[in-house]
Length: 297
Picture 1 (cartoon, rainbow, N blue to C red):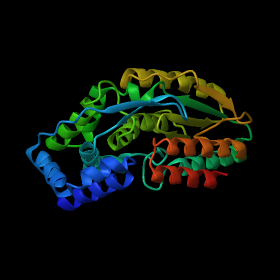
Picture 2 (cartoon, rainbow, N blue to C red):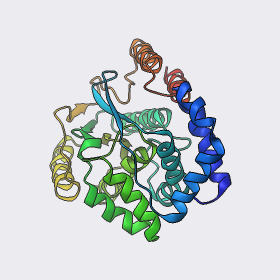
Picture 3 (cartoon, one colour):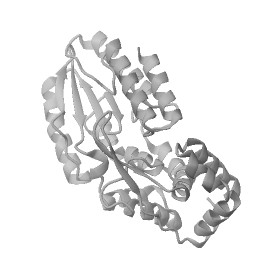
């Protein structure tokens, strides 16, 4: 993180993806000063986050979103790139498809189609348990998350700056920061292994808190559902919401926007355009979404 090339790279990335161009121009006029200030903060190990800019969005559903000041955004990117990604990404299972290179919604749909075809061919009739976690980002427990991070990150300075970011938000993780996205996909990593290795679920996909389990035996999925509820509550202090249910293979099921209906895909494209126009997502995020929807349809 103290490498000037890394700081400069994250600086350029943040400047490029920040929509408030007036703020970018003002900040960029003192580029060298800000880069050196970031270097000193990290070198002296005295980073304290500034206050968040908090606002609410209503599409695709009502959520509280946070925006960081530019210095905090750059440090957030550095922590993600230099600490979290090298430590966390290698230990995640392939079926955890969110917020990772060469993954995302298109990969989730690829797995979804593959399991549909496999179970159709093998069983004809099968069932899908669709789990959705209640207020996932807001419910992530700080103490549990920190203990999980201790198992994969052994450097105390690295842990301290991550903990500073975690504790800067009162409850859960702040939606809108890069560190939150990586930490959110990591928080359920032990759960992923539990489902695959203890419950012996062959067909499994997770996109953040949107979870699918495929099985030919409905009763077994009923049993799995109870075990999952207990595991999430006992180990992660999480609850499933009322959208959680078991589907017959012939029922309509929407997974990360896909339900074999082109009309639904077009509707998702329209919603993403509205979100982009309002400045809630970056151009890169909007383009990635449209490309994945084109792949799906």
